[in-house]
Length: 182
Image (cartoon, rainbow, N blue to C red; front, side):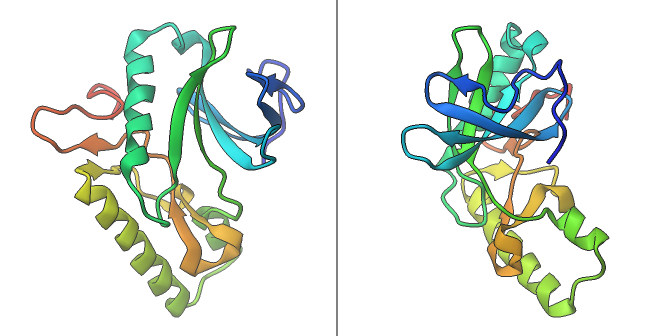
């Protein structure tokens, strides 16, 4: 969780497309910010990856968001589920994905060492998720502790997130975020 700033694209309480109520900012990145939101229709929690406003009009970046959306074809519990891109009436583009509740591996490791058994469980789970991605010809390329979330703090429920610089290995395919950024 991060503190919101006046210049953030969305603030807690904002409603996107009459559906998603922003609850908090989860993180900031170079091209996008990630928010936790709740569907006003279903009540389900979601994560919204929002392309920075200054990039929303740049076709290269909108193509990148569309490519990341295509990762939704990966179906495995160890890989975050992507849904679809949306554009608000004001032109902000966001990618809808599952909200994974739990600490990142980076935060868990800062609290102290994990047992060897727990690390093996995480490693096995992440390997299974990567295998599912590779079966779809997607290579993550940014796997690190901050891109693994332990759902409910459980190593057996590790989930890989942030396929922002993933590469499609099909012949002729480009990097998900474009060759110049990866």
